[in-house]
Each structure stands twice: as structure tokens, then as C-alpha cells.
Length: 98
Image (cartoon, rainbow, N blue to C red; front, side):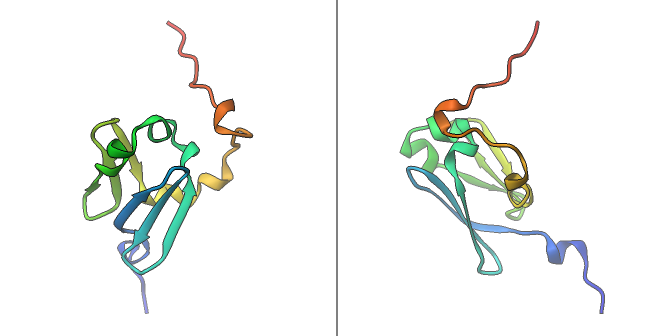
């Protein structure tokens, strides 16, 4: 039996932003919860702005129009591999040289 790539791609069906977490329900019933401070734009957004999200494609991505944030669901599974600051207060945007 073969499995196509689309069978393995996680697809979001629902999104909830709490005060400190981004919670995504996937089409296969799994729930993914990640710290909100991984996404500084969402962390700084108001609860109303976080609540206004749209699915991109068939749920492969999530878009927050009020804060111009886009996330690809599949990439959320690899975020734990990147170095993270000790706390949200330690996060600083990258410096862009002119």
C-alpha cells in the first residue's frame, strides 16, 4: 500500500488562542498546543485580533489578517527543534541592517 504526501500533511480545522498558547485541532482529531510566545505578533495581539483567523488553502495554513501573521501547520511540528528564548520577555526582533 502506498501513501500519498497529502495523506500525511496535517490539516487544521479549528484554532484557539488562549492567553499563553496556540491550540490547533487537526482534521484527524489530533490537537496541537504550542506556546504563544513562539509567535511574537500573536503574543502582542489583542484577544479579539487573535480570534479573527482564517484557514489558508484547505487548512494547510492559518492567517490572522489583523496582525498580518501566517503559519503553515506542518511547520509547527518542527518548531521545538529551534532554540527558544527563556521567556517571551527575552525575545527581540532580528535587527535588519540598512
